[in-house]
Image 1 (cartoon, chains in turn yellow, cyan):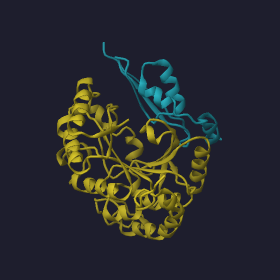
Image 2: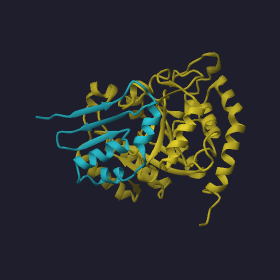
Image 3: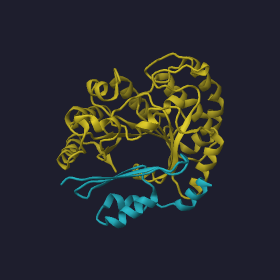
Length: 289
Length: 71
């Protein structure tokens, strides 16, 4: 097998734990003036301050288990879900946990790394770190990565709403960036996730991830948003990253606040699903299952 | 009549497994946080669901792992 510099796992693995250990102090210090995401709050989380994500310096985990619902090339995965998020998606299926950074079990890097190792021994192919949004807990994640076995294939599942500083702290630590590109325009992002200026940072993250690691872009189809969101995302991907793996997910259901929102109170129809696949085909996207 | 069934398995211990299953009136099954064991069960219930069959084929000795996690 020929390894390129970009995807050189054997080299990267040897250095990853070392990199993570060397980055721990800087990651922790970043919380004193938190700008890990584009909200750019600048609060001192080490002193108990909380920005828009409402997370202080502590991290909590609401789920850590083997799962097979993600992309086929990543499963079975040992999925570790952190509480707290920098977005407020009305349809969040884990809203109660994702919106509340203080719920869940207190983060224990050593215990989680041991459980991850056990899962890998028993057949898990990857370890997936997700949320909520894990970016807001990068210091804890860096600590976890510093304890994982060198050969672990680590997947970073993110909403892409990550700052330059956040990407810098994450660089070199993960094998796959699974970026959930949710909205095709700023208006839908503002209305459904309370996010201003969504597009630019997410597109920057996607382009950065393509350049620096292995990338999978995921898009969850939402009812009534095939044209405004999926078509727009697909068109952008076709233009900028035509060979990137794209995972089009149709399993939306009205959860959390979406139950009371007429715009989102139904599942995606088969017609919408079919049209979305047609759009992907028309743009020549590389869909994966 | 349009009906859906939403099942949630969430034990008190957050470290144990969490999963959500939604069964629509047309028989379509959707899942979140799908465990290997549930994938195998759903695949048996719906043998024509190719996607579920592929996921149920992604095997681990999950049952042992879950027991370990709970103790």
